[in-house]
Amino acid sequence: MRTTRVTAAALALAAALTLSACGDGGSGGSSVAEVNAPAKTKAGTVLDRPFQKPDLVLTDTTGKPWSLREQTKGKPTLIYFGYTNCPDVCPLTMSNIAVARKALPKADQDDLRVVFVTTDPERDTPESLGKWLKAQDPSFVGLTGDFKTIQAGALKLGIGIEAAKKEADGSVVSMHGAQVIAFSPKTDEGYVLYGENTSVDDYTKDLPKIAKGENP
Image (cartoon, rainbow, N blue to C red; front, top):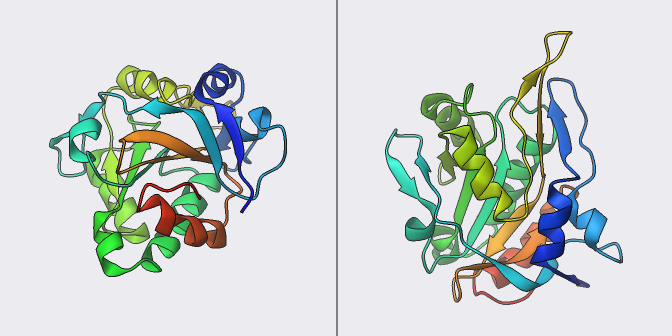
């Protein structure tokens, strides 16, 4: 599989400028990976300078504090920022990962952490977030909390998000980067980035390597 290497700094800069429009009836836009990668890739973009895992403490679907850094330490981890009322990109991304996860050996399935952080905490309560993720994959971790805290944590990973806004027609639009970042169990660094067009087959091919901290 051909991958493109770009720096985390370049991704962080573009994140503030390029977001995907997820809304009630909206359509997905461009992702940061597509802006920065000099050539189109089928799936993973391997970062020359991996992201450090942010010290992000939010609330899980049981209402308890959950530390991203502590509770994914030494585990292969995928993190995605989105929201449950998204009609397109968010549910498709999580569904693709759910299908690919089931293709892993049982031990790797148990080891993998998939973390979904809401960009719409006002509507995504722990209860509603838990119900939505259970339909995707019961093992997925859902996190909500203060929007400013979520926004700051996302930006540290090169992902820009904006607070959900209600449009004149009554629809709610949430602007957020549509990237999935994979963290290595060896270094705990975010070293591979996936755009919104990543398919089930792409994740299925890459997750066995991600599980071992290898480049896809």
